[in-house]
Length: 201
Image (tube, rainbow, N blue to C red; front, side, top):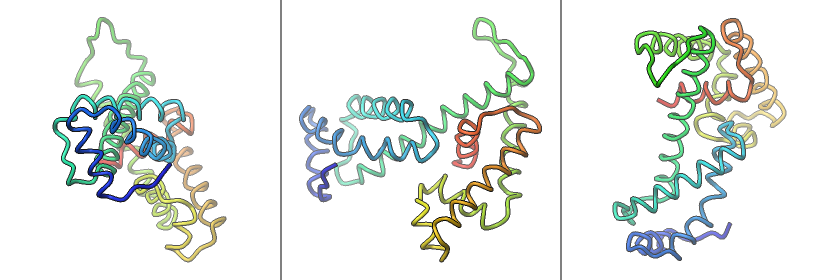
């Protein structure tokens, strides 16, 4: 990915706002790899990350007249990504809750009360499990999940080795899975996405 300074990016955003397809293509080429990497670091599969990135840029093109070239385009993209991630995994969480209680939805109808109770149960169990982690494991988990920090960045912040950070993160994942698996059977990768979604908002 080629780096551009802020004025150059602002100029491309201004051109995109006017419907310039070349500017749109340039911004996609510049920012899509970063969006995909960020989504993957939030435990999204590469295929889903690529799909989300395409959806985000379709949204950007459709709403281009509302763009503000004076604001950070990168921050705007990340905000949309986190919003899409939250909505996706929130739906996944409800599906998981439905499966536990064997609730079948027909013709798009469902019991709002039952679905919300099940969803809130899973959310409460997940957030409580995170809160009960040892302080350092919880901090590392949150930095990786919410702030997308790398193991090297966390190691620098805490004055630890990269290997120690990765071990803390591994132990945190094991403890979270062990706690939540008492009630729900969820694959690790999907579980991590759910946990991050529950603490985004």
